[in-house]
Image (cartoon, rainbow over all chains, first blue to last red; front, side):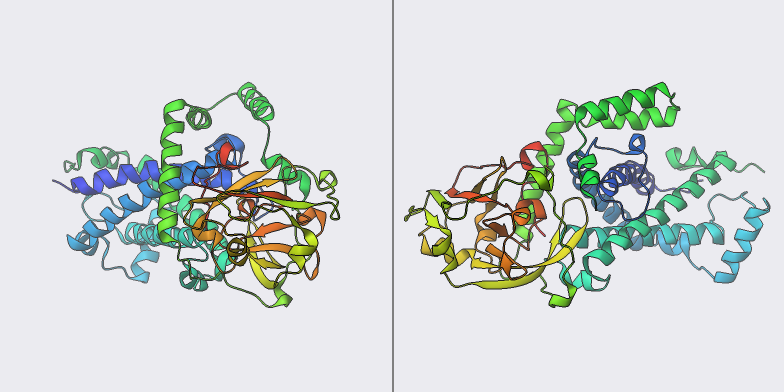
Length: 198
Length: 249
């Protein structure tokens, strides 16, 4: 049966590329003036130096934002979000996280997300939207001043941009670990289909 | 914000390649190898062409987003960053000393009155002040107070052709730069002669800098020696090394 529609599969893989460009070039930009007492390893950064990193970042942002808009428009208009991500109850989320940590979470039916997955995907979508909003304020702190006020002006947006990145990086790492633990989910993101095992 | 760190950032290609070699010697995981290739990807001609084309495209988008009437936020003097950081492509000890008595601001290009200006003549013009946030391309920001001549007033006084595309600057060091005419005419763009109510010190660009609170710090030239108006793209010191030309806030 079809579990990942074509639009979702395409936007997923474009997003993988876009987020990889944005995070690795972003780490290089961060290193030019670190907010905290550490730098990202040079080998993990994109662009070579600040100018190259900025070129990647301000090129990648178009890919990232336009792809994200297609995904959000599709998810809302088609009912995909409502069907796959709702409802979410905090109790169910906590319960499923506990079960997942004990290795007892069932994955027979890949067409249905458990509560922990729903929470993670919703959090990721929110973090990506926050990333765009705070990035816009950093890029245009004067022209988009009213948006910036909501985040504590330029320096507030800078912190928010960093922590949204950290949240995305964390969710991505957990996501990749989960795929490694349940490897039959991996081909479905290419084919869109899976065969019931039982 | 120490100076030496600032210089670390603009690491020379020799240092960068040395680092690459050291890293290679330590051995590579497959993942790191693919990411390492990313550094070299940037230098490839085709990739560089795409990135530069996108940078030009972003110039256009920013020009379109720029509202010539929207003011950068101004702050109370209590918010001023002390000490305001020195930043430049050479250490503070190497800032050229300019003799104010013999200094003359040169004018060139599409300007009616090209007579050079002495500092005394500039000080005699109506002065304005602003407390605004300076945002560096590196990410940090600092709030400072600048005073001087509103640049649009100065351009009107010298009969600059404000239908031209660019205003360019040549500085007393090797620095040069250029901005779009709309930004040059913005009410907060200021030919600054003073910092924190004192004569502009050498480290902040004596005898004058162009303060533009709607652009990143490197677009605010210091130690200005000549100003010209032109329709031909003049580029800039950092822009020619890859920074985005418009770099507007």
